[in-house]
Image 1 (cartoon, rainbow, N blue to C red):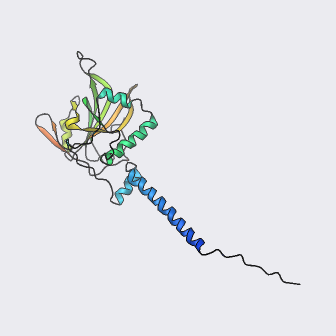
Image 2: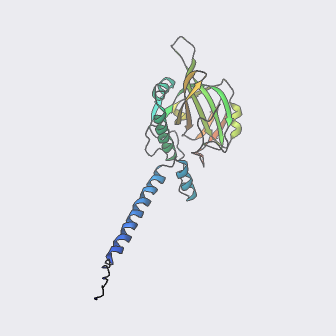
Length: 246
């Protein structure tokens, strides 16, 4: 009886493995490129920020002056309320990411850059700490004051600001008192919005803005006191906002 002869399957040509290796290398290169773009392009994400810190590639905050700050919108309390109060939850999340990215990248693309102006009445003051966005300095919570007309005294308006002073001279916080009036102007303050939140004051909805001056140098309090404002050496994007919480 004739024996059955098993025929070996044909071997795959050598170039099959060569093509497979090149395809895997190409996929790895594309994925690495996309990850690098995501990490370097979105430093406001805490995980990306930590990666950049570990490899020493965090963007250094530029020391702007009044003469070279980026151009942006300028809004008073009424304009701030009209602009930001209608934003919904998802819109606020995306907008805040853009604001933080702008700040951390020195406003290379000054999208949505907004400076505030107006008079604000001081409500609370505290020094910053390790859990805050900026760890050294102090922050003032103040409420906007608006004159309904030319014949009426200014009255509280539903806009709050958390005005951050990045400074090594934290004792300067003692120069501010509750009910003091904080007058903010584009020049010389250049106080830029980095976060927007909707909060409740009792049953009344309000807009709460975290602002940081981006024109650095001496800040004058009254006629006799000055202290220096400098760009922070380190920030914490994982910090919670607003900086004053119930």
